[in-house]
Image (tube, rainbow, N blue to C red; front, side):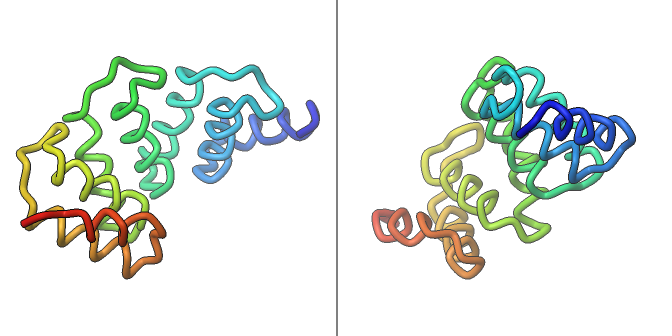
Length: 137
């Protein structure tokens, strides 16, 4: 992405466009057109999430889960995954199921894990089926 395209994306993000905020966060997360910076990525994901953007919500959760731009804190990831999953995000449903299956930041609950894996599958998440098959209840 060119400098001019990054400037325009930043202008839109600073103007409050949730999609642009999320996209700018992705640029910082991957280092595409800007210097890779997890903390800056998280800043823009949070701004997007504050407006209810599913991808922003999910990626704030992912940053907490993995300690990207913030100290790793599984329990803080859960509300972001829950909200995004409730709004239809298949990736958030997958990570919520994974958290329940492994007791990451939430009490281990295989029935809830199964439930969220099934939802992730219905929504097209390609990894959820394998995880569900390995789940033992």
